[in-house]
Length: 194
Image 1 (cartoon, one colour):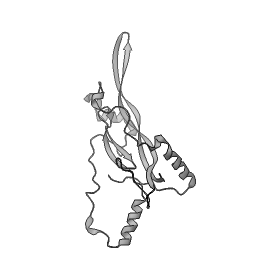
Image 2: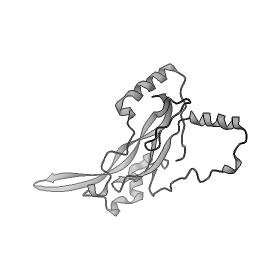
Image 3: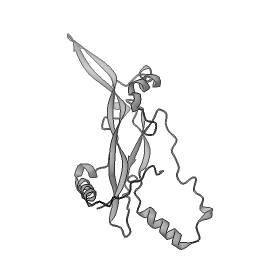
Image 4: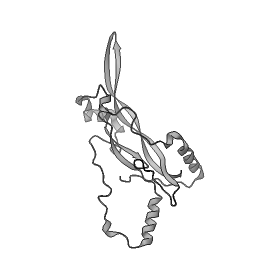
Protein backbone atom coordinates (compact mmCIF):
# COMPACT_ATOMS: atom_id res chain seq x y z
CA UNK A 1 0.00 0.00 0.00
CA UNK A 2 1.01 3.63 -0.09
CA UNK A 3 3.09 5.31 2.57
CA UNK A 4 1.17 8.04 4.36
CA UNK A 5 3.27 9.06 7.33
CA UNK A 6 6.68 8.26 8.79
CA UNK A 7 7.98 8.68 12.32
CA UNK A 8 11.72 8.46 12.96
CA UNK A 9 13.34 7.15 16.15
CA UNK A 10 14.02 9.70 18.83
CA UNK A 11 17.50 10.08 20.28
CA UNK A 12 16.35 10.66 23.86
CA UNK A 13 16.90 7.81 26.32
CA UNK A 14 13.74 8.65 28.27
CA UNK A 15 11.53 8.28 25.21
CA UNK A 16 13.33 5.07 24.15
CA UNK A 17 12.76 3.56 27.61
CA UNK A 18 9.08 4.49 27.45
CA UNK A 19 8.69 2.98 23.97
CA UNK A 20 10.40 -0.26 25.05
CA UNK A 21 8.21 -0.53 28.16
CA UNK A 22 5.06 0.18 26.17
CA UNK A 23 6.02 -2.36 23.47
CA UNK A 24 6.39 -5.07 26.14
CA UNK A 25 2.78 -4.67 27.29
CA UNK A 26 0.53 -7.43 25.88
CA UNK A 27 -2.26 -5.02 24.91
CA UNK A 28 0.16 -2.80 22.99
CA UNK A 29 1.78 -5.64 21.06
CA UNK A 30 -1.57 -6.81 19.67
CA UNK A 31 -2.54 -5.23 16.34
CA UNK A 32 -5.36 -2.74 16.43
CA UNK A 33 -8.41 -4.38 14.94
CA UNK A 34 -11.53 -2.82 13.48
CA UNK A 35 -14.18 -1.76 15.97
CA UNK A 36 -15.20 -4.67 18.19
CA UNK A 37 -18.94 -4.53 17.57
CA UNK A 38 -20.22 -7.22 15.22
CA UNK A 39 -19.79 -6.13 11.62
CA UNK A 40 -21.61 -8.97 9.81
CA UNK A 41 -25.04 -8.11 8.45
CA UNK A 42 -26.55 -11.42 9.61
CA UNK A 43 -25.61 -10.56 13.23
CA UNK A 44 -27.99 -7.60 13.30
CA UNK A 45 -31.73 -8.10 13.56
CA UNK A 46 -32.42 -4.39 13.25
CA UNK A 47 -30.24 -2.87 10.56
CA UNK A 48 -30.74 0.76 9.59
CA UNK A 49 -33.26 1.21 6.78
CA UNK A 50 -32.32 3.34 3.74
CA UNK A 51 -34.18 6.31 5.26
CA UNK A 52 -31.87 6.06 8.29
CA UNK A 53 -28.77 6.10 6.06
CA UNK A 54 -29.24 9.45 4.30
CA UNK A 55 -25.72 10.94 4.03
CA UNK A 56 -26.91 14.53 4.60
CA UNK A 57 -28.53 13.58 7.93
CA UNK A 58 -25.59 11.41 9.04
CA UNK A 59 -23.08 14.13 8.15
CA UNK A 60 -25.01 16.48 10.45
CA UNK A 61 -24.93 13.88 13.25
CA UNK A 62 -21.21 13.26 12.88
CA UNK A 63 -20.51 16.97 12.49
CA UNK A 64 -16.89 18.08 12.67
CA UNK A 65 -15.81 14.50 13.44
CA UNK A 66 -16.15 13.63 9.74
CA UNK A 67 -12.61 13.40 8.35
CA UNK A 68 -12.30 12.38 4.67
CA UNK A 69 -8.70 11.23 5.23
CA UNK A 70 -9.87 8.49 7.63
CA UNK A 71 -13.36 7.74 6.30
CA UNK A 72 -15.34 7.50 3.09
CA UNK A 73 -19.08 7.42 2.33
CA UNK A 74 -18.51 5.52 -0.92
CA UNK A 75 -16.15 2.60 -1.48
CA UNK A 76 -12.78 4.24 -2.18
CA UNK A 77 -10.62 3.03 -5.08
CA UNK A 78 -7.73 0.83 -3.92
CA UNK A 79 -4.46 2.56 -4.56
CA UNK A 80 -1.81 0.61 -6.40
CA UNK A 81 1.67 1.75 -5.37
CA UNK A 82 3.42 -0.33 -8.03
CA UNK A 83 1.36 1.01 -10.94
CA UNK A 84 3.21 4.32 -11.19
CA UNK A 85 6.77 3.03 -10.83
CA UNK A 86 9.18 3.69 -13.69
CA UNK A 87 11.82 0.95 -13.81
CA UNK A 88 13.43 2.33 -16.96
CA UNK A 89 15.57 4.88 -15.16
CA UNK A 90 17.34 2.86 -12.45
CA UNK A 91 20.42 4.67 -11.09
CA UNK A 92 23.71 3.37 -12.45
CA UNK A 93 25.69 4.29 -9.35
CA UNK A 94 25.77 1.26 -7.02
CA UNK A 95 26.72 3.35 -3.98
CA UNK A 96 23.62 5.47 -4.45
CA UNK A 97 21.46 2.35 -4.69
CA UNK A 98 22.96 0.87 -1.51
CA UNK A 99 22.52 4.18 0.33
CA UNK A 100 18.89 4.37 -0.75
CA UNK A 101 18.31 0.76 0.31
CA UNK A 102 19.81 1.41 3.76
CA UNK A 103 17.65 4.50 4.28
CA UNK A 104 14.48 2.70 3.23
CA UNK A 105 15.40 -0.32 5.38
CA UNK A 106 15.63 1.90 8.46
CA UNK A 107 12.37 3.79 7.86
CA UNK A 108 9.13 2.79 9.54
CA UNK A 109 6.18 3.26 7.25
CA UNK A 110 2.50 3.49 8.06
CA UNK A 111 0.45 1.17 5.84
CA UNK A 112 -3.29 1.34 5.31
CA UNK A 113 -6.18 -0.46 3.71
CA UNK A 114 -9.81 0.56 3.43
CA UNK A 115 -12.13 -1.55 5.62
CA UNK A 116 -15.87 -1.97 5.04
CA UNK A 117 -17.51 -2.04 8.48
CA UNK A 118 -20.95 -2.76 7.03
CA UNK A 119 -24.31 -0.96 7.16
CA UNK A 120 -24.45 -0.73 10.97
CA UNK A 121 -21.61 1.86 10.92
CA UNK A 122 -21.31 5.20 9.17
CA UNK A 123 -19.28 6.06 7.28
CA UNK A 124 -18.95 2.39 6.55
CA UNK A 125 -15.53 2.74 4.86
CA UNK A 126 -12.62 3.49 7.22
CA UNK A 127 -8.89 3.66 6.67
CA UNK A 128 -7.35 0.87 8.79
CA UNK A 129 -3.69 1.70 9.55
CA UNK A 130 -0.79 -0.21 11.06
CA UNK A 131 3.01 -0.44 10.99
CA UNK A 132 3.03 -3.75 9.14
CA UNK A 133 1.29 -5.33 6.18
CA UNK A 134 -0.96 -8.19 7.20
CA UNK A 135 1.06 -10.79 9.09
CA UNK A 136 4.44 -9.44 7.94
CA UNK A 137 6.48 -7.64 10.59
CA UNK A 138 8.36 -4.69 9.12
CA UNK A 139 12.09 -4.76 9.96
CA UNK A 140 13.87 -1.43 10.26
CA UNK A 141 17.55 -2.11 10.90
CA UNK A 142 20.59 -3.60 9.23
CA UNK A 143 21.62 -6.05 10.48
CA UNK A 144 18.14 -7.09 11.56
CA UNK A 145 17.08 -7.03 15.19
CA UNK A 146 14.71 -4.09 15.31
CA UNK A 147 11.17 -3.82 14.02
CA UNK A 148 8.56 -1.15 13.42
CA UNK A 149 6.00 -0.70 16.20
CA UNK A 150 3.15 1.70 16.83
CA UNK A 151 4.40 4.98 18.27
CA UNK A 152 1.14 6.92 18.33
CA UNK A 153 -2.57 6.19 18.07
CA UNK A 154 -5.61 8.41 18.12
CA UNK A 155 -9.37 7.98 18.21
CA UNK A 156 -11.69 9.18 15.49
CA UNK A 157 -15.46 9.21 15.90
CA UNK A 158 -17.83 7.25 13.71
CA UNK A 159 -21.54 6.49 14.00
CA UNK A 160 -22.81 3.08 15.13
CA UNK A 161 -26.45 1.96 14.76
CA UNK A 162 -27.55 1.14 18.30
CA UNK A 163 -30.83 -0.56 19.24
CA UNK A 164 -32.17 -1.07 22.73
CA UNK A 165 -35.33 -2.59 24.09
CA UNK A 166 -37.66 -0.22 25.92
CA UNK A 167 -40.49 -1.53 28.07
CA UNK A 168 -43.56 0.66 28.23
CA UNK A 169 -46.00 -1.05 30.54
CA UNK A 170 -46.06 -4.69 29.43
CA UNK A 171 -45.08 -4.01 25.84
CA UNK A 172 -41.45 -4.19 24.64
CA UNK A 173 -40.34 -1.93 21.80
CA UNK A 174 -37.03 -1.54 20.02
CA UNK A 175 -35.69 1.98 19.73
CA UNK A 176 -32.75 2.45 17.37
CA UNK A 177 -30.55 5.47 16.77
CA UNK A 178 -27.11 6.45 15.55
CA UNK A 179 -24.52 7.03 18.30
CA UNK A 180 -21.01 8.41 18.03
CA UNK A 181 -18.40 5.84 19.07
CA UNK A 182 -14.59 6.08 19.17
CA UNK A 183 -12.53 4.13 16.64
CA UNK A 184 -8.80 3.72 17.29
CA UNK A 185 -6.30 4.29 14.45
CA UNK A 186 -2.49 4.22 14.26
CA UNK A 187 -0.99 7.57 13.27
CA UNK A 188 2.78 6.97 13.57
CA UNK A 189 5.35 4.16 13.72
CA UNK A 190 8.85 3.99 15.18
CA UNK A 191 11.82 1.61 15.04
CA UNK A 192 12.28 -0.34 18.28
CA UNK A 193 14.16 -3.37 19.65
CA UNK A 194 12.24 -6.66 19.64
